[in-house]
Image 1 (cartoon, rainbow, N blue to C red):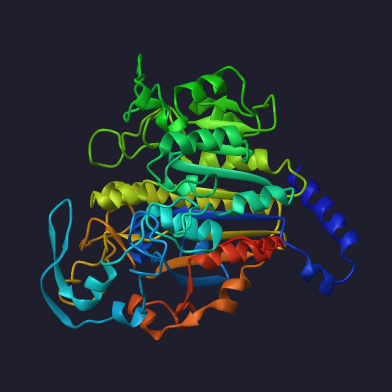
Image 2 (cartoon, rainbow, N blue to C red):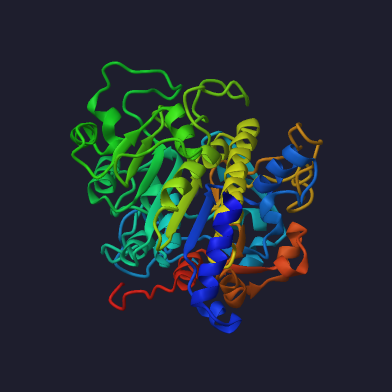
Length: 480
Ligand SMILES: [Zn+2]
């Protein structure tokens, strides 16, 4: 069946694009953007060591485009400043400074973290939050921290989800955390403040913009996945408030609701037929798929929630039905939460779940599409925790140390909050070369032990432009 489909596709493309030269000019049909929230390079490496004992074995290690991305916000103010005052500057040379620094380098919630090096201090200052970072990825514009597609001039901004739907494609947004949390909301809604969960949830559901919205935030379940009989109004905030949720249940929105693990898995396996063409999936957990369950160790997963790869496969099953193509954003949202907690076992658990979701996406491309019509981007919205090796108090940016497959690597945390590190960005497929065209070289990236080809960086706003360029969509000239 799969072979037949690929053959049919090849014939169809051959008929439309008579020559290779023309074929190269056609726009990508699909873009899949995969964001592990709050992951520096050593977060990626921690999962890789845990799974494979060595680096280089993850599916994105074979991607043609491997660069880094800057993530700093326009300003660390949390409301519009209507000016350039307090604008964040970024110079990667400052990151690499191994000049000794004394005293406390970062005052975290978990405690104080020593300075050690000037570069660490630079990395721990003036960092983005997930809202400004999500907005940069989704609109191509930097803004203030807390803004969801909202400018520093207090204006609503048009995001890529709106552009792709206007182009006739379908939009899908999948997250392992609440569907109205900052990163998913940045591909679905607008708000001057990320904390307006109920308003964002209402916009996400009532706009009907996306064909697929999957996340957590279920009002009738707690953080451990246990049913709650009489939730208060606050429990409904992630799904747009109680009235919005009731409209979903009554069938008065564009969406069919699914929530059980069985239904998510049936959808992923192509065994669930939807009544309509749009699906809202709210996993049976209030916070996130797994991370907020009791305890701090890995394992003993909650039974009634699906995995991120299952959500990814389910979303692709629905989105592929749009003949014009789609844009799908998949977020591993709790990697960030594990880093805030300096919880290595669950950081690795969450990043492994994310990596398996990337594998699901790549398998989908190779079975149902091809790299000439689909681009996959794998990145993060910012670093978190400044995770480094055990010797990183002595040697700046000393890497983490593998203890073999199935064992946690040796690490040292230098923060419990976000950073403005340069973070990994991998891309493969139609239009991925955009990143190489706009990248700046920085030999300082050799500090990360990456080869010369990867010693270059783009800005997080380039993700928007790369996706738009790949899809052949022009930005509206009146967009701020
Ligand atoms: Zn984030």
